Amino acid sequence: MHHDMDDEIQATISSILTTRTAAAHLHGADFSALWKTTVECVSGGKLLRPRILVGAFDAFCADAQPGLQTREPVLQMAAALEILHFSFLLHDDIIDDDLMRRGEANLMGRLLVEARTSPWSVVVGDELPARRLHWARNAGLLVGDLMLTLAHQLFARVQVDRPSRLRILDLLDATVTETVAGEYCDVSLADGYLGSDPDLVLKMTCMKTAAYTFELPLRLAAVLAGAQRSAEDQLGQVGRRLGVAFQLQDDLRSAFESSNVHGKDDHSDFREGKETALIAYARSTSAWEQLRPLLGTQDFLPSSAPTIQCLLTECGARKFVESKVADQVEAAMQVLMDGDGELPAAVRDFCHEIIGKLESGAL
Image (cartoon, rainbow, N blue to C red; front, side, top):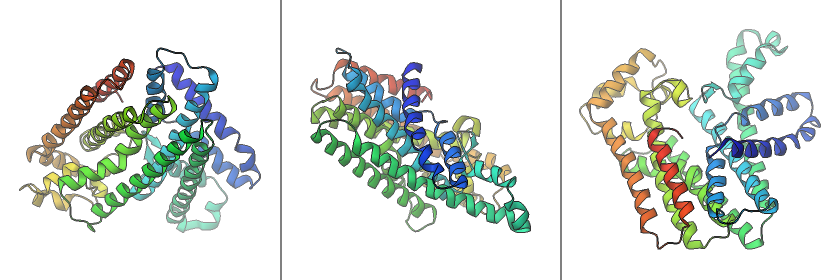
């Protein structure tokens, strides 16, 4: 996964968004300003999912350099994946009341800053903070819907043969449905609508993150490269396991590391009372009585975070989740080894590269 690949992907995303800037102007200066801020936010991503897609496709084509006509649909799909991801992030940040992403202000956070200097501040007066926050979240929700529609347009218009396009659209449909189901499970767990247990939380993690972060890019690469369905399925199984490991690792970082590592608000999972695998495990231990009053409270105190971290470590929750990460990585390796030679050696090597980066925390 190299810098020139990132440049290709970013240039494609920029081209797609820029061509829609004129349409935004047609709807007035305010909407045009919202679109401009949105474009800036989309451009700040790590490009994990697009890089997995393009890297896997290049691995499939390692023995035959694809021409520009073959590569263009791949870059379009890579851009569509990043835009799809951005739409999910917006909705997720609204659900979680987060104003930061990747260590910087997210779209809602930027809109709040911009609104402070608008004439609106004079009109609204003392009600400004609450009204401004409500406005910014609603704007984020609308932009999330717009980005989801744009992603679908890109998937539907990709220049491939009809059977491949239908397969790609089926993958998009299944992935969006599963991701929404996972997010619904997540909020239901957080609000106590569903009873928690580690197995349910792992299932939620699989639905919410694994499907579109690793499985979808790898499956798309196989389809675009013209691989057999059996090879696509094998890659999908690898991706699903790595996606679970990636999310569990992210939960560990959010709980035990600072925002400059995980990019979200400090202690946001504790503040929100998010039902991660760490918390689900801790519920079954004697530490829960001390943990419960510290989590998900309106008056959450950042100073309580070290106590929460200590309790999660002492009760075995941290070790449990770390072992689950290792189990998922091992399972992914096993799927790679168990295949009957359907995946080219270069594709296997690429998957091993991803595994190495995941284990080292470099993804």
